[in-house]
Image (cartoon, rainbow, N blue to C red; front, side, top):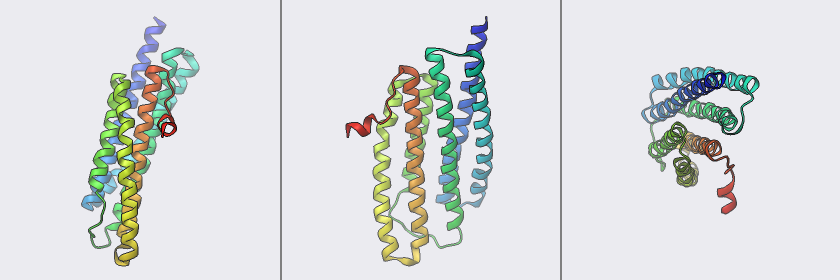
Length: 222
């Protein structure tokens, strides 16, 4: 009977984490829309959502640490709780990066719109897809799906590097659009960091399911 209760608590912990993931996913999508549409209302929504994310993070952490202390789980259950704690941190940092994008959106509201050599919409879609896949891998305990998220990271890294080079050139050649270009550089970097956090989540899913630490393996292979 105690073990049944424990596994019910694990399911509750997972549900809390998934609710947190939904908030973080929403933050990314609204932040990108706020930037692209220059929508102050959406910026305010992202700011309010950040508060909800921070509260959710504390709630998940408290429950996870409580289960570790009281239940002393072993094997796959221990790996699950440890993974939840790490994933929770990455979801909170996704919220932070989204907040940064919203701040960039607020800053460009006061300057004319400029045509810039960066596709923030495509980067935002790619980062959101990575989060969505990583969370789906968590729901289904699917290590193969999690592996596919890791493979997607190279694409957004390439987009970010290309955007950085092109936007620096814009700042040098067109000083009148330097503020817009600088904000685009920061936003692209934020989206690349969001993708990194999605990759971290995928790697934690792999650790939970397989008991294998795959961090740094891609870097070592390169």
